[in-house]
Image 1 (cartoon, rainbow, N blue to C red):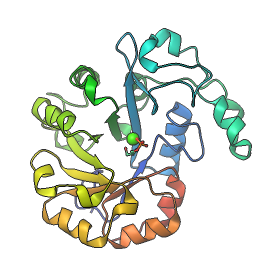
Image 2 (tube, rainbow, N blue to C red; image 1 turned 30 degrees about the vertical axis):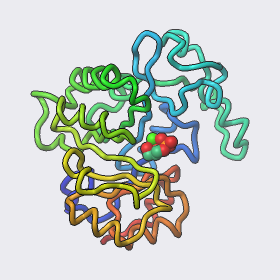
Image 3 (tube, rainbow, N blue to C red; image 1 turned 90 degrees about the horizontal axis):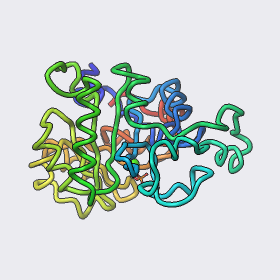
Image 4 (cartoon, rainbow, N blue to C red; image 1 turned 180 degrees about the horizontal axis):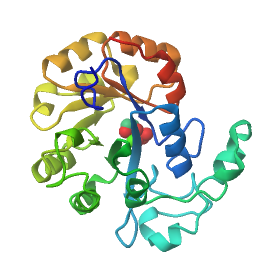
Length: 266
Ligand code: G3P
Ligand code: CA
């Protein structure tokens, strides 16, 4: 039985929509999140950066250049300035076969906007991209989550797993464990072989290695340490099928629809 969305007691792999349904829509826009939800994602992933006026927004890069019609560092602009930018047209130009008229004019969403939009109806997988800005970003993240009643007094057991926080940086995770122990935490890593599982198990609930560095033994070992394994970024059908057969708990993917088709029961 699927007891929580995070993968405990699950029957199949958890599907995390990497930057939304980013294979089919402009990443980190409401259009991409909505498509991910419609395609059946268990989580939508949001990478966070902070604006000049300390608002948390969903964007992967620390610059505006690749995914908007603006340019420069995210932290050099206010939210009002960033809201003027078109975060969808680049996708239509780059992928004419997948272009949609309504992608034009999509804006960069704030974390609060996304959560306001979906409330508790979906699950969120959130990465703080700038560890040097912890605790500033982490505190603001917690404030938004509290305000939206996703953590804190008004939450209950059913809310466990609704938010997962991921980071490459142990200090960010340790800070969050201390401040909000109810949050599920995933330690990301570039290379599974270099992840110190016993150490990670002291402050996190799972590991998120690059899938191409993974083998079945690692998955077993992580499970023996009580850690979930959520790996990134899995876009090929063959890899999805293989990882599922290894009992991997979840995958980040740009192609939720393909993942849905392929992850079966363990
Ligand atoms: O967060 C897992 C994966 O998304 C890490 O890569 O660069 O897409 O954030 P990136
Ligand atoms: Ca990420």
